[in-house]
Image (cartoon, rainbow, N blue to C red; front, side, top):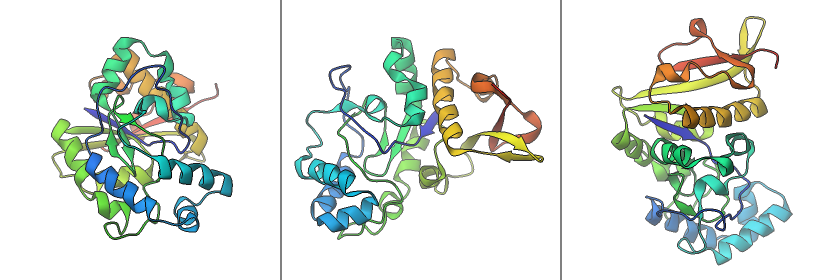
Length: 249
């Protein structure tokens, strides 16, 4: 079983906490993307990143100085979004780190796929970014089936805790013999399951923490998730999704 999650836009270095254990598996591809970014003007980078001048200036300077093999931080400690705050890996015990290193994979527009202790450097490149160059037409085409192939080489069951932007880079390349199960976190309104972005990110982070602490190894184990007021709903779920509904908490 493998768990997939999205990255976060906000990143920082934390190599004074824990050291990385290895380099990402798609280093050659990341280097190609870095060279494409280095060839872009400031205005082209701003358009690719769709961000403010302040954020563009920060990341343009990162690109200019970027070395994919130096001053690296474990991926799991580098991302700083809501999901990662609720996952709270900084307070994981060793056994929790061991679990996520085996089971958790972070999808990335820049690195492709990351194990928690792969060494990374801060970057900005979302999967849906419109980057075009000599070797890139779109990131979905650039990565093709590589992410799915890598995951399938590791496991025949994928637990999806990633956003649609990232998960579709995987599921559209899967064969029928691979189980792809999406966890849905929502609330009921007029007999409909309503998902709210921030709450979903919080729940995804809590689910990773729950799985690590409880050593979840199968689908049935997921169904006991009860954090942030969520409870599994058998009648709303099927072979492709597990639905968790939040009550007042």
